[in-house]
Length: 431
Ligand code: SF4
Image 1 (cartoon, rainbow, N blue to C red):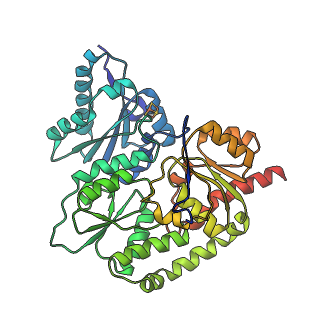
Image 2 (cartoon, helix red, strand yellow):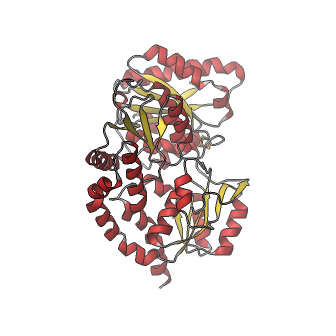
Image 3 (cartoon, rainbow, N blue to C red):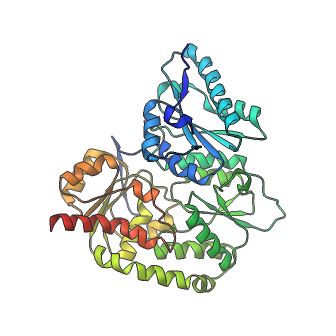
């Protein structure tokens, strides 16, 4: 009998808009699925492994999104499950257990194994949450096995991270009720950005700063009634809910994108611990001055340019706020797959009044609006970019906004540059 689940061969070795109306659309959408989050999650959590239970399509998606990375010991793989009837499910579970056992025997450094569900019907029939419980019982204390869904039916691409972190929250240690209040920054940030924020928050005087996810399983933050958490990403609604179920309280703030967003985000954290804005201003002065000066070049190029966002990462509203408020760009439409009004309240209040906000997607209608408006730059997924470029529109791949370090002062000019570069290229081509 041929194995029903195989490790994929290439991987086997290794505002003003606070109350503004929102155009809600339901129809065909052009967004990556939640498996894409594995690309940045596996880099961040260095002793975790992501085992996608899926099809060859899933394997190709993760591999191509991750780029051609040849690791001696990769931290993700796809267990390919073939078509089967219900009677074959017992075999599939046994095969999954065998694959996991082989993997964990070969890779003793793995401390957390995520079984990541996908959309093929054979995978949907498998109960991955029971599989995770069964395997956790077998492998604890060395390895905890968790599951979440990255299925394209249930998730758009940044929701994969939300589902992953929400799965982690119930496993976080309980904070000591007598310990002083602590801050947890929530959302995957590149290490360099995390280190910058850790230094700034320490200099401001915020005690006990931890990050979720941490780089290693043993460093995951404790959580309890005295935990205050601060989101670094806007797409973490399920994670926020799970943290609140553990007693943690959210610090409301805009997101740390651009000089203004970063300052307000730090101020909100400081205020939650009784530290005033003057202290934040003093600590951040040099970084703010540097970042503002660095933005001058792109400001000259982007001022007055019109930008249209197709919905993709849920980062659209904070980035639009940065582009509008710090670079003077004009917002034609700001689309987002989901608009979590509560998490985005501070962002929406900062968007220029009258900004056209849309949630969800009916891709044909949105393409019609975009073509009619002919914006200077269109932010969209890879699938839409080439056709729009062929029609003379300048595009920015939205996936780069997630794969590039963009948070914080030191990255503000890099974020602006992501928009300035395609415009510069278009000018050169048409000169
Ligand atoms: S999870 Fe679904 S949408 Fe994503 S790659 Fe697999 S089959 Fe495609």
